[in-house]
Length: 234
Image (cartoon, rainbow, N blue to C red; front, side, top):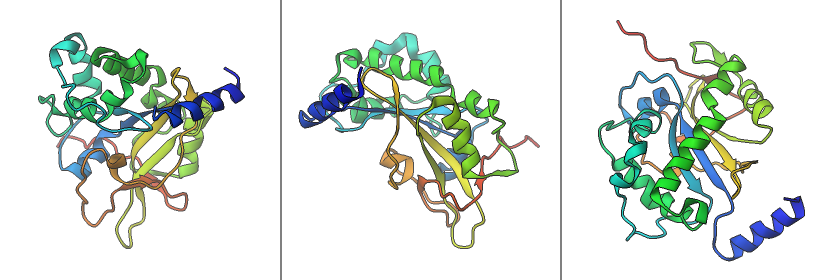
């Protein structure tokens, strides 16, 4: 698709109230649980959601039905877990109701199975955990600069992502890597994400501030980044 054609399509779709971009959102389990007061030993990035850039709760009568994605459940439990309640389907229900029903305006995502399977497909395709690891950005007690994290990601994807951190309270010395958004167009091709300062988990899950820390927002270039490792078992 030529750039001019894409811009025309996006502006036309936006005028019709349709989404033009999907945001594949992944969070780092250790950071999430430090905020949400849960425990996890997961050592890879997990899915938070696949979010259209316009619309929320587009069809509240289209209820989540786990039986329609029964074949996906084992994979979702591993890569799209509810870190606060691992045995509950409520997180997936919430994501479907808030975001999936809007994504479903596109024929390519117009069923629960299409929506959840596409999110899993994109998650594996872009493999954020390995992208960072291959650039030697790994969970560690050492700190990174935001430039190091950004360069590792951008050099692989060749697009701008949105990197979000939990910021420290007054006097804090570092920010904690929390969530990364990767954006695709309606053809599921990578495109730049827009940077904004909207807060915690992009307002998707209510957050709990911990020890004076602020909620999640775009990382600050002037502050070191902590990528917390899985705590060792005593």
